[in-house]
Image (cartoon, rainbow, N blue to C red; front, top):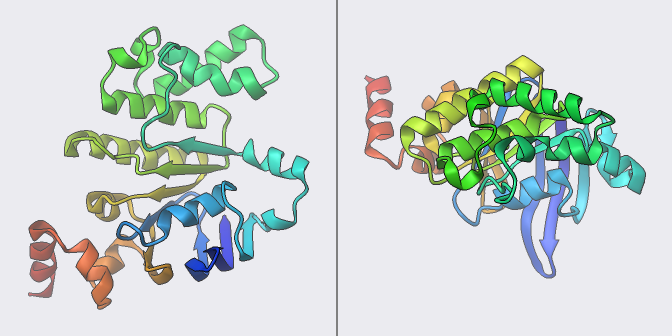
Length: 252
């Protein structure tokens, strides 16, 4: 579980996040949603340590990040997995070598053990057959699956995903969503997903945090989205005709 308490982030005279209080639950897909410029990306960067809050607390299972020494922060980062928006694979490495890369950096394993662990993760995302290909030789959706395999290869407690469905077609996006949801439950991970994809919200949104102009405007589940009376949330989620019709049908 990750908690933020009274988190505020400013850049000079400009405040981007205002007194955010939120809980990101273990073994659940926690989604951060909001319009572009709302502050959701800044919030995630504060969680992973790329930015330092101006004030407030960030707690990983009760451990206050802001009071940690350098060594403790390094150890905490080893408990994190990251799936970047552009997958961020190394073009010069094979699929297997990309997944194995964190093991080469941090794991006290021999080469055969690292290969075996990387192959286990590739099998989990149904890409074992592609292990000897290079990123340029596989599709965008497959690249995202490789990125997920790499993110879980060190058995993280916390998984952060920045727009994992960006640039993908709806069918492939559904595959990625189901994969992230399954891995979250299978490994008991605290998964946090930063997304614009309202299909993801309604598909796997077990704990949704809506950021609006730097404030936490709403928090709830995908089922509670359907009955929400929050106009700002409704404007975001039901902007498409599809979701508006669903909402109208629920009200009849």
